[in-house]
Image (cartoon, rainbow, N blue to C red):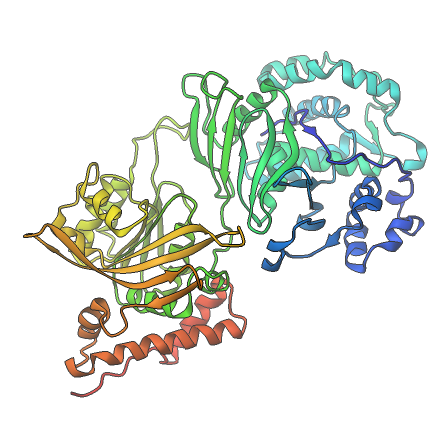
Length: 624
C-alpha cells in the first residue's frame, strides 16, 4: 500500500479563473469551451467531466485547443511544439505541452483527482477506514478484492451531496488542512498499530459531516476520493498514470525534483509531478519498496525488483549515497511485445533480415542479440521468438521477467535472490535454472541476458545440441568474443563457434537528430583457428547509415545457410544456392502479411502458424 502524500504539481501555465458549476450536474452545454471541442473530445469529456475542468483552466487563448488523439502514431515524432491530449487509462489522460525554454516538453497527467483539493479530507477518510477495516472478518487477498472493499467502505463513510448544496472546502477548512499537514505526514509514517491507536484521537472539526459521522462530499470529490484510495492503497500511487501509459519506456526520479520520462513518440519529457522535500521522497520509496515486497533500509539501501505489472525498478534510498535524495528508475514492461513487423515499420531492420533470422532460428541456430544498454536487445529477441515453430517447447530463464513467448508449451523460470522479503529459502540463480532446464527437454532455451558463469552452462547446452537464444552486452562481435572468453564467463575459445549468429543492435542518431534503434549487423560465426588464435565470421547483413538500408553481404556465400541448414535439409551440393530463394520467399510472405495488417505480435504469430500449416514454408529439395 503506497500511502497518499503531499506531492506537488507545478503547472507550466497560469491557471485561468473560471466557473465550473454545472459540469458535474451534466450541464455541459452551458460551457462555451465544450461547444468548441471536436466530437471525439466531447465524448471523452462526457465520460470524464474532470477533463473539461482541466481544459477550462488551461489558457487556450495562448496555446489553442489541444489535439485529442485516441492513439499516437509515429509521424508525431517530428512535431516541434506538441499540444496533444491522449487517454492512458480509465479516467486518466496525458497532456503533452511544449516548453519554449527547454528541449524536454511537459508531461501533464490529468487524473480524476487532479484539480480537486481533497487532501484535507484524506486524514478523516483514512481514520474512518482503519476502524472499518479492523472490523472485517477476513483479509482481502487479490488487488481486485482490496479495491472492491475500499470502494464499498468509502460509500459507507461518505454522504454525496449535489454541488448546489455548497459542500466545497471552506476557507476555514483550508486553513485547518494546512495546519495539520505535518500531523498527516507523522500519521502516515506510523505502523498500522500506532495508526489505529491515534486514529480515534485525531479530530477534524472543520470537515463537513452528517449527524451519524459520514463525511459530506460533492460528486466530484467522491470520484476523486475513490480514485485516490485505489491509486494509493492498491496501485502504485502517483506512478499510476505513468505505469498506465503504454507509450512510456522509462520513468526516473533523480532525487528532489520532477519525475522524468522517456517516451516512445515524444522522447525525453519532464513531468509536472515533483517531489519538493527529501522526507516525502524517502517515505514514498519506502512505501513503494514495501508494496513490492522488497523492504529497503539504510543498511540495505539498494533494491532491484519487479513491479506488479512486470516493469523493472531500481531504488536507491537515502541522501548518504544519493546526494539529491532517494532516487528510482523504472524500465516499463512492454505489455504486448513488438512484432518483427513493428520493428521493420520503425526501420530497425528490413524484410530480408527478418526472413534470414526466421529460417535460422526455425532450424535451431543459436543466436545472441548484442548491444549497449537501451538499444532494444530484448525487444528484438522477443520479436524473433515468433519465428520458432509453434509446436516447440520453450524454456525462458531470466532474473527479471521481460520475455513474452506466444508458444503454449512455454516454461517461464525466474531467478530468486535471498533476503528480499520474499520468504525464506535458498537463492536460486540463473546458473541453477539453466542447469535444470537441460533436463526439461526444451527445443529452445532463451536466457534474458548472459552476464556471468551461466554463460558456461549456456555454451555447454549448445555443445549438446540445445539451441540457445539470449541478449548480451557488447557493441561488436570482437568485443562479444572477448567478453565470452574472459573473466567471469571464461568460455573455452574452441566452444565459441557453437554460437551461430550474432545480431549487433544500437541506438543511433539520424541526421535529423532523432535517436532510432537499428540492427547494425548480423554475423555468422564460422570457427576458431588455434594456430592464429583468431575467430572467423561472415557479416551476413550490414546497415548503411547514409541510406538507412540493409545490405545482404552473405548472399551466395552464407556459411550457415549453405553448410548448416541446406545440409540439414538434404539439399544437394549443386543446388545449395536454392536456399537463398527461400529467404526471398519468406521476405515476400512477411511483406504481404504487413500489407494485410497482421502487424501485432500475437496476430503475426497466429498467421505464421497458418502459413506453416498450409505448407508454404516447406522447402523443396531439388535433385542433383
